[in-house]
Image (cartoon, rainbow over all chains, first blue to last red; front, side, top):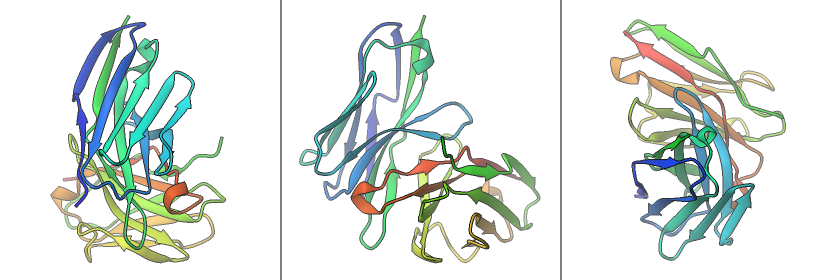
Length: 113
Length: 115
């Protein structure tokens, strides 16, 4: 059974700092990996999708990498801003006959002005 | 920008009652999903739906749950005889492609409170 772990559970950084969020998964047989942002009491906003054949994806200040063989992904956020404060969720796409996402518990990020 | 829309945003129901959670997926998407998140816990997969039938369901998705696409735009989750432990945020998601190319887009969620 696929398990997804995110470290750290919470992170507090001063504004402007670069930071890395970590995600690990137990089964490397994945279709893809998706990073989401979740604001308190809100839905999930897709940030980046990395297909299993890709190594990284970039969107603005965000860069996500994938090392499928070692079961790891990182989300790099450059020049953090207070508006980046949210919970960041990592999810891997798997499924034998269909497709489903298995989520980590998330990293709660606070960017201090 | 197209988005997944869920209604209601919050529903309170009494234990044992039936609830229907509604979703309007992105219009050109073919694959639909329901997930739930119990407060403080991980987001969990419930069911996937394609071509008017269930593709896969988790062990959570027992006979108490059902899904339906009653028309060309809506996708619903029905929970019969709700229990206290059904209290959670329920998310609908949709995607245009399957498998490796799947990028799932989620709605804002329906917070279900069973009292």
